[in-house]
Image (tube, rainbow over all chains, first blue to last red; front, side, top):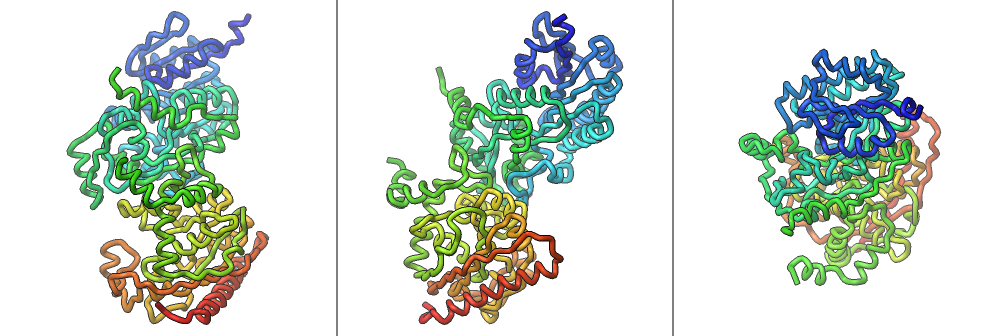
Length: 315
Length: 271
């Protein structure tokens, strides 16, 4: 009897460390099915795990078999991964397939993980950007178009199919143990590039706090778009110092110089299309989410940076 | 002792340290606010501003106590001097007042964030990109905000137009009404003489993407500066047409003109 009341949830992007944290928080109270397009993740006998492309027909079989109540879509490919075309296929077309199936099979709750990158980094950005602010990044870099398109798509479904109860979360830099994104890689490294003379304000959220935010969002039905960020800030170069990174300045003027240099170097941890995020601040306002969902991050910036600093010290 | 701590010990007195720390500010765990203000950098800025305020420009300020002790407030002044020292001096006057000091935030031109080092430095000392959203969020945060509604029209004007107020934008009035923020007018006299310009090389300014390139002396002259703060002006937030907003802006402008005249009559020596 108890088993019948347990919600069935599909979690995408299961191979990522954030998904693992979310799975750990939900596995006691929910029946989970996890998927990832990259690899099959072994999570024990109680959690079925699949390596599957959302665009393949067999993906629908999962919906037929498991009768999901909700979907937590974390399977967005980051801008530093794969080619532009493959990202578009997975992030935009794959998400469209996922949302279509969610509608077809009567899913009642969908949480989509987006990113603050959608706002775009420009010199004229105000601080504490609201959810209503325009998404400028598509006009600034072709490499971020898929992130904006994914959001637009989720937005259309949010209004067209209110029963899906779609909530889109736009977190700031997710960092912490196991995170492999651009920012976490930079903070982990011994030497980190900086644009000479620029140290924009940044926000960081610990992976555990972000997992808590996702679980909170899933558990409280309602539609909407929310920024997720702690109400705390630090300048990029100061963050690097606190993490024990040695700063390597890259000439910043004229702007074409660092862009060309980064294109030539093609550094995975400092891609040219994210260059402006290390030049101009994109500070988001996470207060709406905190108020609506009662979210309070538990890991302060100092603790986050201590982890990176200590991980560099030899045992 | 490293260079940084040596400089700190020489430049930041214990009294200054305590003074800045005692001012209530909405900052995060590492001393920053969302606009980049830094509680440590401001102490160096304070030391520099003190020298400029007391020794270089020998500022005489009156009525600084008229800036309310708390809550949102807009400090509106006349802009001048090519290199806008006026914001720094007004800010220091309010931050250094003996009773209930506040660290006001100055709205700066939109090209500053694109300038390496300088953009960040200004932000760390409390300056903020002059964007209406920024101003609105700061008023919401109960900050005191310095606005020069003339913008570059004021700071870039030639010496022959000194103390002639240029066109004021209406944006500050909309924000004051929306956030129920009093407006404290301030008349600034002396900054016009710090860098008198006889011409502006517009084509070069356009090519470099800066608001103006003045033909002037390559130094900031030590002119005496007089700051006169006026009584707070209150404007209700009822829905009114833009024409009436402009009338309200004109009232503020008239007050600033009176305060400028007061400063000019008080001034005995240019330098």
